[in-house]
Length: 448
Image 1 (cartoon, rainbow, N blue to C red):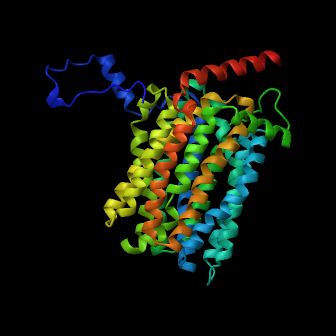
Image 2 (spheres, helix red, strand yellow):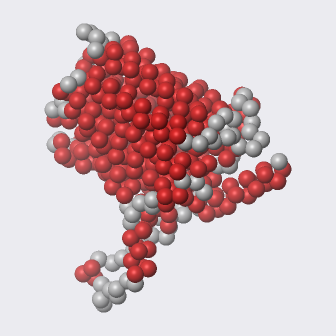
Image 3 (cartoon, helix red, strand yellow):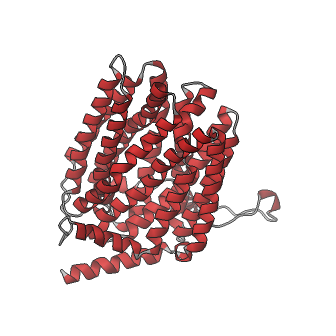
């Protein structure tokens, strides 16, 4: 990757290393720490960060408990995998509709309404879990509904940050968002697995419901975010405009295709409930949390990402490393080793995610940001959701280990083939992308 200095091992250094000055030490430290500037300069960004960090924590509890409960009711990894397919169906349409609305309506209000509806979905899961015999079909219905509502919400949420911060702070904002998500991704699944195995699913779902109250309060305190000047009215034509724009940008297409390939073949989460039976029931939460541990470690030292300009190359390398780690996970026969491999996979995925978010936020003009966020959502949810279904099908036909290992291998092979097919993506330089966005927005303002 570009702009990363290399240093020889200490025992090969022939002369004493000179001491760094105070400014140099601060610069080195900032390269290995998370940048808090976005939180310091923007009140609305702070509120948004609080809202989504708390909401994500609760949602991650349900994210673990829902497939766990499905497995308890059906004893079928295929049924767990089909939850992903059920969640995928509404995303295909609702993400594009949500993207068009995000470019026309108040984005804060869109997120607020969506979170209210998602809170009702969590309440339904609580009530179902309190029944003497919880219904598996209600889990499918809730998973589908929550997925569709989230697809409406996500483009507005993604498009909010560029309205609240200047473009040069997008790498820092991506890292902060990832930090909040990974903390929730560690604590939520771990606690969810423990609560589900000891107190039952209803408690975990109730905590998810309660976190929405805090999130909604923070969103309510934010200022309105008017749509861009000359916003396009939602229509099939406006959606098609976003699709044409994405198709004409090789750096965007690269982020979509590389991630879909990695997650479709290398996403084994549908198998975690079955794998956990070997290590103990409560370990299911630790399996779900382990990738977030690796992601958090990367996030906490993410200052170096601002010095990397070859974003496409960084995404490609990280996707390949994800596949390698998943192969190793497939062969792990001890819990600590399985968790370690998943943490390595999560670290690689976070590197990929940081650079993909930076490409999206630094290069897409504001008047198209919502529609492109809808396309992005389809790309980064298609792989995991269909990948879970694929993992469940392969495991049901062969074995769990075959499903995990073959998926990791195909992830690596697919990443290599896409890298050869997308040379412009490998050469993409973030500085050029940011300059192009500034020119496009200046031209639009002049035309208006």
